[in-house]
Image (cartoon, rainbow, N blue to C red; front, side, top):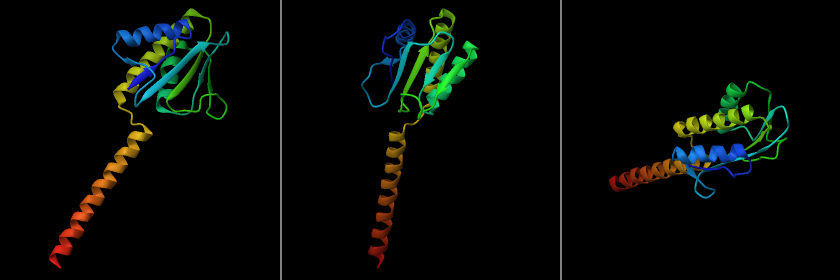
Length: 149
């Protein structure tokens, strides 16, 4: 699993540094990449922009625990982000809220990494492998029955 955090703000740069220090893979290429776009936002509240996903729920949980301020969540049909592997975060120009976002996102990344969350592609591959195994087993049974006849 890889995390792509473009260095577009001081909070993004700090999160990138923390992830690199803790040994997380950073970059935008790979089979499973989570992109977190952190930019400067409105003055008094944090905005999370994404579609309903496990990572967004974890980010909301951890940021809201630390920030204790208003957090606006843009749903997939309202916001700009339309992918489950992408999260947009608008951070107010406030050091305390910026630190809360950085720490909250890092905690979300740690928890998400420990969960071993399967992607849709992983699930499809698993289902495909199970179907192939079932088909092979069925073919073996059919072959065995044909051999008996």
